[in-house]
Length: 210
Length: 185
Image (cartoon, rainbow over all chains, first blue to last red; front, side, top):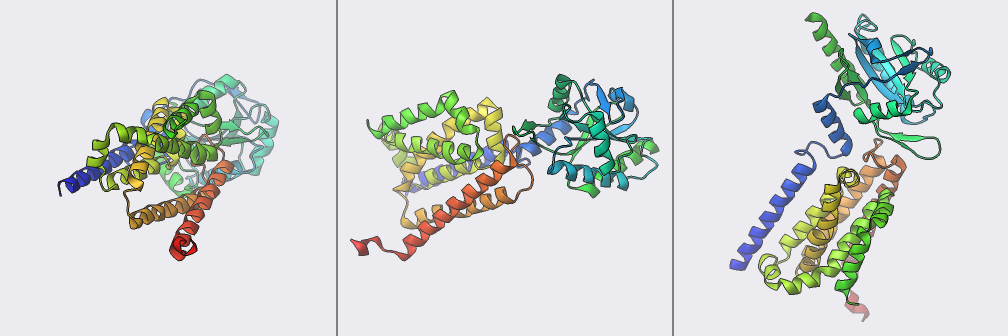
């Protein structure tokens, strides 16, 4: 009987170890993938949009301060992408349509940033934007010509881009919301269009009421 | 060379950074070769610990259940998509992988397996059949990239790997259920 008690005790100890291991390994059963962990971490950190030069589909060059006192709704893409990016941009355009139009351009601007600056020159971006009814003004598409500036932004916003060697990239996708002071305040699931639109609308309504 | 030194040698070989990097560069090799071989090195090294600390195993793992639970927990932990990513990004997690899989999974597996009855062994295999088939289904059907360090196509490959192993377990269980080896002796 005594031996059995040792076994039971050891089993309980092992199960406790397992609970602790899984608890810390998943941030309290919250994040089972590194992507969820990354998003949670970003929302805690609220990193600032770095000072990088954007070049948009009209060839205009500016930094994020162009959108001062406006929220910026951001996605990251490359135009040669045939899989996730069209879906991502299509969903972005749905969010664009769902937001009350009085805020568009006034309180919020949409911005698609390419991480493939070599191929995505203003001309290419200009063609691409038409496919999604982006007007190039309240929804702009831009590249960051300087690779090291681009890398610093991707790193800060936790965008992981892996070239696959055939001219394609594997990358994680999300909706990013930057506030009027240039801080990342929200990262949203790009497949939950209604939820994202609702969240952004709430933020805008609260902001204008104040 | 006896199996203890062979296990140790294999373990050291797997730790060598170029070997580790190469195996981790492909998702399915990372999860279905490197990790199981690490468990096997522990399995091979187990007699060393059993002869050094016979009382410990006798006292705390007499019926084999604590050991097999530890094995299931550690292996289950390494099946999470996140742990694979973190092993590549954080050195502490990588270190934990090289310690936990041989010593907290391989060693207890060997000590427990012969102590478990037939029902216990079947229960463990049934558990892993279900777990592997579920993970396979998950990795094949997830449209999202579950691991940031691997491509989606690798994820699907891993899914099929899981599914194949799950099916192999089921065939094994079926064989054990329907055939009696002693009838052929």
